[in-house]
Image 1 (spheres, rainbow, N blue to C red):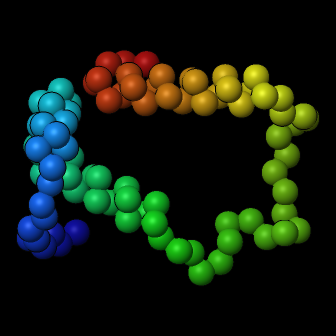
Image 2: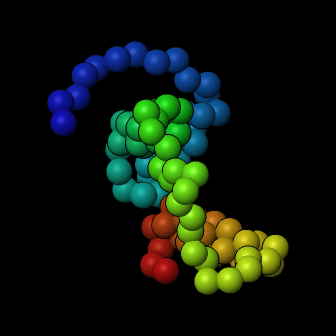
Amino acid sequence: MALKRTNVYADDGDLRLIKEAAARLGVSEAEIIREGIHRIALARRVWDEPFVSDEETFDLGGPVEKDDVRSAVTRGHEERERRNRGTAA
């Protein structure tokens, strides 16, 4: 992937967070910024076609309760936090 240089203005607090994350993960600040740009660009992307048509469904193997969702979200959050700290699962 060819990289192009650009300038952005960032809040002091955000820059501090970027510096801390880069140090914790052992990567450059530029890498953290590039990843952030990529993630927000994907999050704001408008897709030409839906992922799932109205005729398609997902088989979740049965009813999904509120506690199932809470548990899955909690596990995902904890896993992401471990990854962000650079520790094994």
